[in-house]
Amino acid sequence: MTPLADLPAWAAVAVGILVLLGTAITALGSVGLLRFATFYERVHAPTLGTTAGTGLVLAASMVFFTALGARPVIHEILIAAFITVTTPVTLILLVRATLFRDRFESDNGVRSPRLANEAEENVSSAEAGDDVLPPRA
Image (cartoon, rainbow, N blue to C red):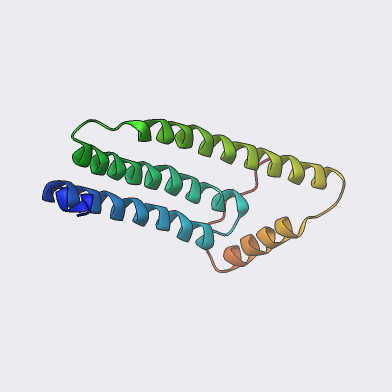
């Protein structure tokens, strides 16, 4: 007999809903990675999806093992704390490194292909009549 047979119906439903919501939010973050145009936009969507999606999957794990073990299982809180702390820190480090590289290249007269592509996208959207924000000084 597997331990899944001992899982109450309310716990199975809760675990199913939490896992589905967590995977849906993580998938939305991945879609944002593909959909957005610039690096600075692309790096933000997966960060939010990873943090929120992982939190829901960890909550599902807590409900599952608590219902099976008849005692509170809170190991996942430590995992969630590490992910919640490390994901935004990684985002900040990536953005700062890219910003430093962009400033260094523009100061030395080198035009990076990424910046050239972003400039072309801004020009084409301005020609199409879309609202384009002016570049920051």
